[in-house]
Image (cartoon, rainbow, N blue to C red):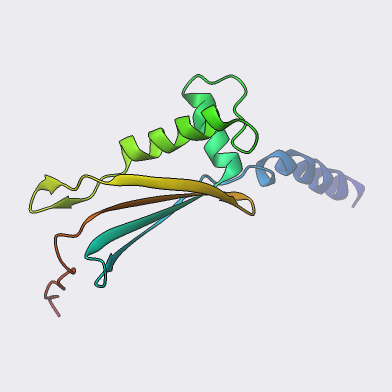
Length: 124
């Protein structure tokens, strides 16, 4: 019984570092604004994940909240990596800005909309 409890305790101790790992996530919402005729994009990235991405790009001590150059670098990173195409051509987005909202960096972009999305027929 004691061996079993020690084995269970050892397994739990080894599992603790794995449970502390944060999953890298970002949410991007693309919408067509019929009133303005614009395609609007809102990216929401947890601050920790944004700073981790900057470290991978070679910035030693990124600080999205306190260091405007760090924030600008991450916004450029998102602008380079996020693409939308229409009829095989990339849509050119304009960066509107960014803000901190809770524990996330929120980035806003827009572009002239090629039109509302059309549903594709689904095979049943």
